[in-house]
Length: 179
Image (cartoon, rainbow, N blue to C red; front, side, top):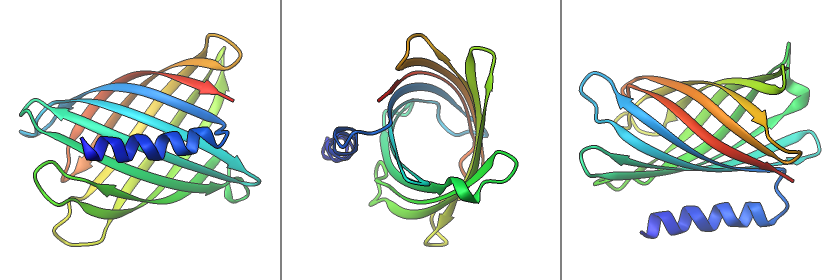
């Protein structure tokens, strides 16, 4: 419960500072190679500050094994570093764990998006940079499409696949609110 409250407090803090967007998403995740299935809830917020985009994400997974895990990530990118519509980003995260003390990790990735039809198609890839050899490796590939249903509200659908130590694939649906 404490973990969820910390993540929610951080999320509300950014959202109340006039974030450019807030997103709520639900993902059904299938574990691969013997890993458990999970239902995952995301809370995300982002803010543009000049040439920089700051992001925060809280991820809570409820596993089929009746355990829960939560992570909190922050990222930053600079639109001036983009090439061919692809923007690199860096960040840091903390996995609070389910039965362990959790661990910190760095994040490096690439993101891209393009207006296609009435909506916006997006894709990204990110890798955890471990702070300890004991921490799990994970690279996640995400693709999605965001369809506006009003000026400031959009429905998002997406697919994800992760590899290395954590092997999962997921399908998600969510809502984004722009400010």
